[in-house]
Length: 246
Image (cartoon, rainbow, N blue to C red; front, side):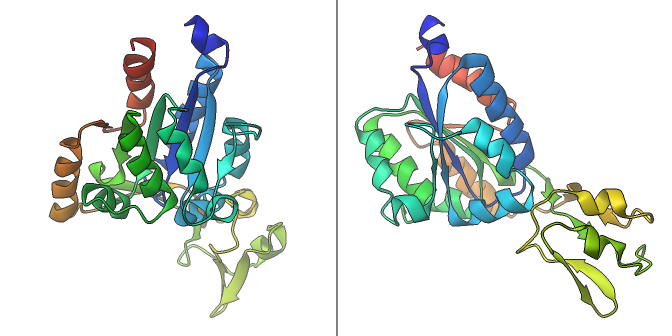
């Protein structure tokens, strides 16, 4: 515990482009940082960069990885497609790699040894360097969380939300407003301004998990060095088991 409180323990966190478990994972990672005083380097896939903005998590990310050595946010733009920072795993600079959430695409690539994104590359290098890897596949859930949207059946087309958006992310399509998710930052100001309750954020909806994805998750469990978890709450218990009890 003394080592952890000293701030000397470094872990890596890989984020992919899934909305499932995303907000919950952010809360857990912030708790992990604050409780155990670890340094967290966050590695984002290109899709993750988009969903973090859409889900309004950019400010929270800056608290988890505020910058500085081993507390960077690593993206394609600052590490290149080859992910030059992946060499840290070969040198044993991280005690642990957490990938949460992991899309079905990411899981499939890991299972079949494909390393062509930031996240799949660091998983490959972590395993080669003997760094334990915790992975939360998004397809273990039969629900997902969706971004902000406007219910056109409830919307009365007052257009007040358009002027309320500080990012100009709401336009008009066929007489009613629509949120442009390529611009939206998930600030939810439009939610508070809508008198009809037509704008909703972070709704949970049911989804059907493909058999193929479940088969890949089963194969993932068989890979030496990988620890598959089923929900974000397990991140801290696995961290304790792998790091504190190491």
